Length: 160
Image (cartoon, rainbow, N blue to C red; front, side, top):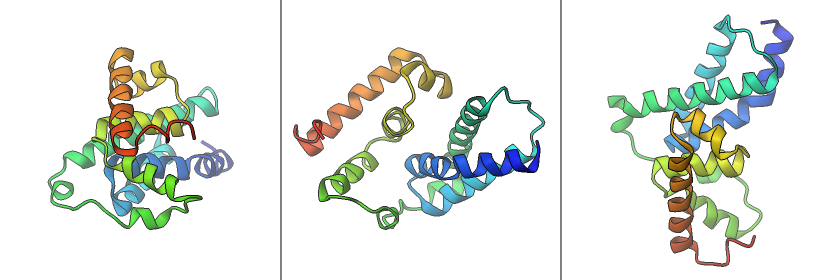
């Protein structure tokens, strides 16, 4: 990989990878570490990518797998969730802050599919491939997540 290709990939994906990791791990420092590890793997890989989209999907899958590995580690199990993540975001309205809190309170499997579906704009089939599940399981997780969000936020959040 050429230096300019790598720099372009880092600029294009850093924030996205960080948000995926933060959504999964709910820990600012761990999310930064995951993002750096994934970008280092990209630098070291000899994999030939067809295009930027192919590289971005590889980075997403690598990020999620790295998050899963960290979540299993004994060190991470002994850490507490980071409330300071709320301070990293700027919210246009109180409602956006409430939606963020509600999403972060979801179980991790639901939180991950919500992030990939709504924030990464991935299709059900793409999410299923990334998390190595079937599309019906992704649909079920999205349904459960929406049900949980509706119970937390009420009906009016859906229209905004």
